[in-house]
Image (cartoon, rainbow, N blue to C red; front, side, top):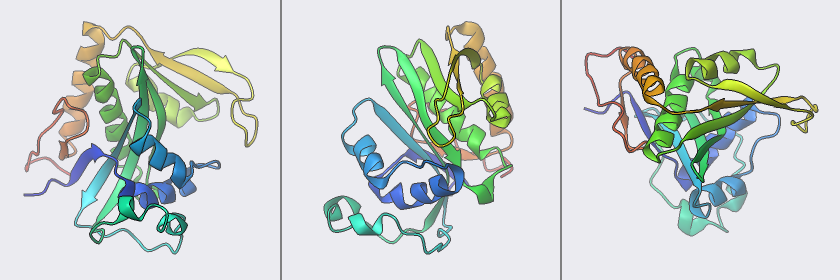
Length: 218
């Protein structure tokens, strides 16, 4: 049986759906070319998606990746898409630091803890890479995201003025350190709660953070 959600590495063929989520989530979305670079060339990057199988993506008419089809045809040629991406995220890992580079969930699927599941996947990916600290940036005004990050142990450690170019808003730097036994126990508690509500398989983190439980509610 196919699990309701699949947490897996991002592929080039995912970029069109990822860009659509970005377009609806951020005022300065990454370009399709940036994602090709992150997936194919940046060896420090670890990009993941949360997939809802057997659910074709909605047709929005917005196809930013279409103009790259000729240039990247060998990378993008694939079978017809029969799944919807409900969330995505990425991190850069270097010198013991796992830095969350981007994360978002599809507007139509918010309020179902799917963004939290994606964040949890990134955190566990950091653990699998043996990170000794986790880092991310967040807008000062984004209190909803800050509450979620605090749930996973992130605390404000710095403030950068005029970080966001669209409106010159400040950013908080939020950090988890150290990743010790107490923190891992906190993660396990969060995981146990979340996987009691969401059934998913994991081929992204390398830790097998959950297996499909047909009795779990989606």
